[in-house]
Structure formats: structure tokens, C-alpha cells
Amino acid sequence: MLRNHLLLLLFFSLISTKAISQNKIKWLTWEQAIEKSKKEKKKIFVDVFTDWCGWCKKLDKTTFAEDHISKYINENFYPIKFDAEMETSVLLKGVEYKFIRNGNRGYHDLAAQLLQGKLSYPTMVFLDEDFNLIQAIPGFQETSTFEMIASYFGSNSHRSVPWNKYMQTFDRYAYFNLEVGKKD
Image 1 (cartoon, rainbow, N blue to C red):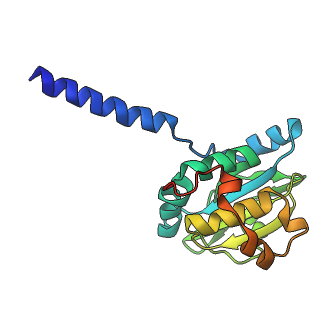
Image 2 (image 1 turned 45 degrees about the horizontal axis):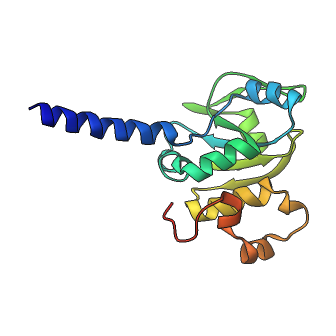
Image 3 (image 1 turned 45 degrees about the vertical axis):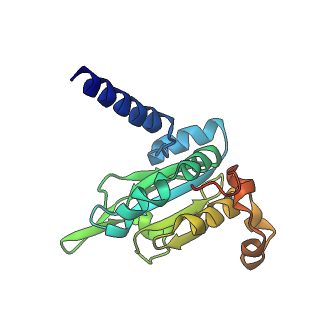
């Protein structure tokens, strides 16, 4: 009996140690990202989602749950998780964006602005250090594709390297400090 308890204790300590060491994306609100940006400039990564979106939930459980992805996002961006149907106003660059009721639901005006009127979820939005739109990318992204996308904007390669060329020369091991052959 004591042996079984010790084995269970060991098992749960191993699980909790793994969970503690794992990176998680440190999602911010718009207000928090704006405040942090006043002290240190970084690009902004916005995950535009809705509560009812199945692909948004899958993105959270898969791609965004990857340890190396979380670490990269936290180091290179101010990440914002933005509910496109939230009813709270957001003040950004002197403009107040509000919820707009539309039928039984509605949408946030800032989501419509960021997605250029194409309300599709999930959509990942990359903003520069001054909160100007760089690119909005709709749809669920597998880890390998998201690695390329995030590093393309995170490294400022988008400023000088065409996407097609970047895809051909992308080295995930260099950007994400991964060991060759290691399963991620």
C-alpha cells in the first residue's frame, strides 16, 4: 500500500514538474500591451477568436501549446488574445473601438478593423511596434506553418525577404533553438 502511494506521488511530481517547466503564452489585454509598449517596444501578435469557434480551441490546444512556440511568442511579441465578440470598448491610438450588435450576436469594431472587414476565426494578426497592421492571416495553422509565419514577422524578414524565398530557406532549428531530430 505504501509502495503504491509512493509511486503515485512520484508520478504526480513528474507530471507537475513537466507542467511547471512548460512555457505558456502570456496573453495580455490591449491595455496591458499598450502599457508595456510604452516601456519597451515589441511587435504585437493578436489571436482573434470567438468562444464558439472550434478551430480557435484547437489552435490553443495544439500549436499554441507547443513549448517552443510559446517561448518564441513571449520573447518576440506582446501577445493579445482578442475575443472578436467582446462587448468591452478598446482605446487604441486615440480611437475608441466598440462592440457592434448585429442580429443575435455582433462583433467588435476593432476586430473588423484588424481583419479588414473579413471576420474569419481564428485569424492571427501581426502588428508593428506602433500597433500598425503588418499582416492578418486567417485560419488554423499547424505548428510547422506557424513557426515559419511567426519567425518571418518576428525576425523582420518580412521587410526584405519575399515570403516564397523565406519558405525555401527557413530553418526551424535556428529560430527555435531546437535539436535536430528532437520530437517537438
